[in-house]
Image 1 (cartoon, helix red, strand yellow):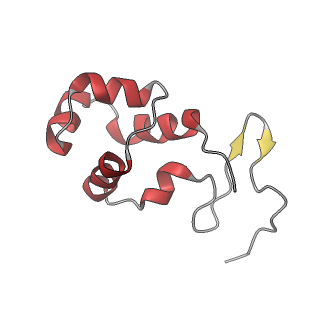
Image 2 (image 1 turned 120 degrees about the horizontal axis):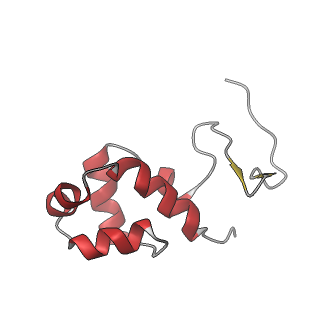
Length: 89
């Protein structure tokens, strides 16, 4: 089982929150400080992550995995495929 990368989750959250953290927090029903904590490396609970995913229209896996739908993302300068072969679309 692959370990969860809190920095990766935070990066994805910063991408969807963009420059509207107050409105984003209000819309998903969490405090502004919680949003800042999530954007700085605290992993949201499953319930909150589910609300974020539904609100943004992205699957929960998009926030957790570097490879979703064939998307290969490099972390820390190394490939994140963990030995898996990429599947051409």
